[in-house]
Image (tube, rainbow, N blue to C red):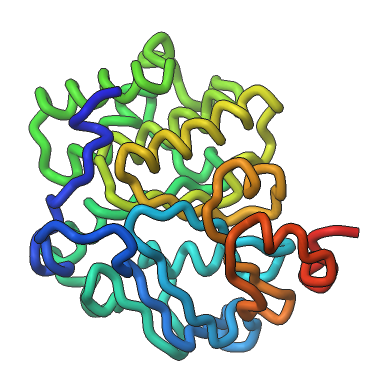
Length: 270
């Protein structure tokens, strides 16, 4: 397992919270009364309050349309609250702050997002160029970027794909490339949107094992899913979003998944 890819990073610096070592269980993200509406009139999140803790494996669980993906995009600074607040690494995560180049570079080095649809994430001519893109944008030199790319391609078992076009790959291969393009930047926090969607059973199992391994290596893992098997295999805590776009439950997976009334109410079981 390459240490330079999987070791916890302190590269962000004080402009995006303290770079000092933090204790397991310390909040990395804090959302307070967070609401978001598309076009100002289509609610996606309603007064969501939650914390994402250092070192945890957190599953955002809910039916399609409940706001899981929107919440991940807010945590990644792609969307901003209609009302309420979100802090990241001890600093407000706002549009104004992310327009500051130093803050933005610090934040982007700490948080990686793997989209549900890999085609929305890959765009380069070759897999090698795709995986190198992010760390080159963060200012790494070509030699260091090349070493990181080689390490992460080897770790994910896709070295043989380096010269291929991402658009000629299978769904499972594209998913591995999308994950590689995030891991190569060595983020502290990994956000996954419906990570097993469209994958065959063998690739789903590989991905579940990878998420656990990444967490054991020091990464904080947050996944949005309605795949109850994945939650049972991977998560240590669940936050359930209801169809009214608010948090309806939070707790260990065993207790949450065993609450049939809760699961029925959240439209997660029949």
